[in-house]
Image (cartoon, rainbow, N blue to C red; front, side, top):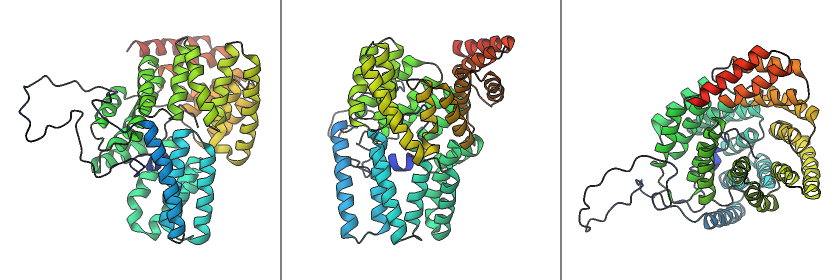
Length: 443
C-alpha cells in the first residue's frame, strides 16, 4: 500500500526480524571496513562527515535481487517447517512475519490475505497461544483495526509476561498511527534507551519529523545507519525510504528523491519506494522516467494504488486508452478491498478518487471514514483536500481550522488549508496560511 504516512505498524515484521539474507550475528561495523591486525597503520585522515545515503562501498549490503530471492526461499522453508513441526504456533508466526514482509516490499496484497489465513489457522489450533495473539495483533494493525489489535496485545502479555517487550513495541506503533504523538514519543525514547538500532532509531526519527523537529530527526536518521549490523538490504532501504518521506512532507523534494533512489538502489523491487521515486520524477517533469519505473511495478503488484498512479501519468502523456484501462482495473480492485478492509484502504481510495478515479464526492466519503479511524495531520489534510475538491467548502474550512490548531503543521499542509479557506471565502486566513508556508519553506 502506497502511503505518505510511515510504516510504523509493520516494523516488527520488517525490521530486525531475522529475514532471509540477514546475519544477525554479524558484528557491528562503522561505514569504513576495519583493518586486519597485520595491516600497517594507515596515515591519519580527516573524518568523513556524517551523511545519508551512504554508498554501497561505505555500507555494504547483499544485492537486492538476491536478498529478495532469499526472502522468498525462507518463506518456502518456513512453510515446510510448519508441517514437519505439527503446526506449532511459533513456526506459523514465522510464516506470518515473512508473508507480511514480502507483501510490504513487493506490494503484493495477496500475501497479507495469506498471512491472515495462517493466523486464522493458528486460532483454530492454539487460540490461547501468545504467538497467535501477537500475530493477529500485527495483522489487525496492518488493516487499521487498532482497538482490536491493542486487545490482542494485552491478552498476549497476560498469558506470557515474557512478551512484554514485543507488546510494548506494538503499542508504540499503534499509538503513532492513532496520532497519540506524546505517548508514542515517550515510548520510542524508552525503546531507544534500551536497544538503539537502525530500526528503533529510524522509528523515533520519523516520529520527531512528524512533530516538526526536522534537524533532530535528520541527524537521527543519519546516525541510524551506523547502527546497522547486518548484510541484508531491507533495514537500510526501509530507513532511506522513511528519511525520504520526512523530506517529501517538509517540501524538499530533491532531497526526498535522492533518498528514494538510494532505497530503490538497495532493493530494486521495493514497491513503496519505487512509487514515491516515480512521483518525485514526475514532479521534476521526468514523466517518461516515472512511467518506466511504474510499469514493472504495476505488472508485479496487485495493489491498485500503483495502477491509479500510472493511469494518471498515462493520461497526461496522451495514452487515454491505457489510462482508462488501468483506472477501471484500479476502481474494481478498490471496491473489492474496501468491502473486506474498509479502514485499511479508506485513505488509499480517497487519494485514488481525488486523482485518477476523478470522483471527489467518493473521495470525501472515504476521507471522512479514514478520519473517523484516526485524527492525524495526514488524515485531516486528506479530508480537507477531498472536501475542497467536492466543493464542500464549509466542511473544508472546518477541517482546515482544526488542522491549523495542531501541534505542528508543515508548509505543505498550510498550503492545503489556504486553499480550503479560499474556497469558503476566508481570504485573509488563506493569505495568512500562504505566508506561514513561505516562511517555513525559507528555513
